[in-house]
Amino acid sequence: MVMPPIQFDRASGALDGANLWERTAALALATGSKISSHFSHRGYNMCANLLRKTLPERDIDIKLNADATFAFPYGDGYWSKLLNRSFSYENELELLFQHSADVDYTLLDCGANYGYWSVLVSSEPYGSHKAIAIEPSSQNFAKLKNNAELNGNRFEAMKCAIGAARGTARLSGTKHEALSIVGGDDSGEEVPVIALDNLLDDGRVSAGGKFLIKLDVEGVEIEAIKGGKRLLQGDSVLLCEEHGNDPHHTVSRYILEQTPLKLMVYDPRSNLLETVTELSILDRIKVSTHVGYNVFGTASAFWHDRISALNAARRAQ
Image (cartoon, rainbow, N blue to C red; front, top):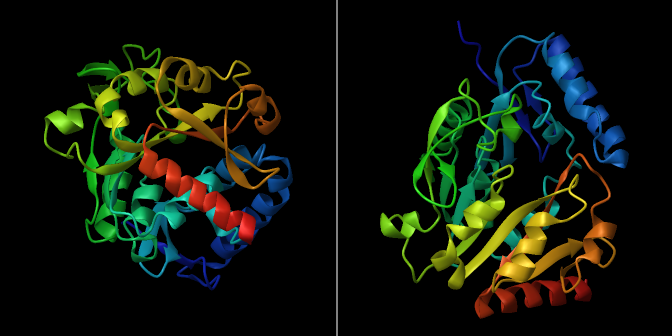
């Protein structure tokens, strides 16, 4: 028998449908996030996943805003930080998405996992944008589809990986948030691979559109960028994960030195999206080896002006 999901409202803090132990666990998960946030949540995922083993198997539906519900297995180490109402997930992306609510763009959510950003960006407070959520893992895709259905199927879900060209690959990894087609062995799930530009070829998006392209593809970022040359020449912003454990800043170096994209990064010191001319700025920003940092790349005058306006608005605050 499948148990109905627990309900949690981030705005009010209301937790419904949970028994006493599940309520106690929610308090522990939220408190653990608050405490571990002082050291980039190191150890939180492991502790949460241990606690999860003591809980019944059921989902929690989190109300992110009045028009967005995001579901995941209760106690999941990666997503349970959302029970901490002061936690902001990838706040540098949040800044751009909120500031772009009035722009007619499509989100390409590559490596969508359970679809957090597709759920939010397609919601009314974020501008009700079109989104295509792309996820290769069958296990993750089932949860992604569930989140699409919870939100009225207002975004499209595609089961495939992103790479340099069409083909197939095998997934590797044990954590749902860190699966990769890099080094996949024969035991991994075989998945189809497409290039970003194939979305143009297949008529899923149009060349004249505006795009925010979130690229969280665990080690194949450069291959994915190579496969999206036509899209990235237009009005697109690449939102790409730079790994905290990479002292060479491989992805940013490639964008800066091998593409026409202008590179930007959120600098917590200035609270602005700063243009990167020297990679040494990342030595200061990437303080934790176990987390990812998002860098932005664009060749679009439109998006460059929008980001400049975002910075101006933040300076005026």
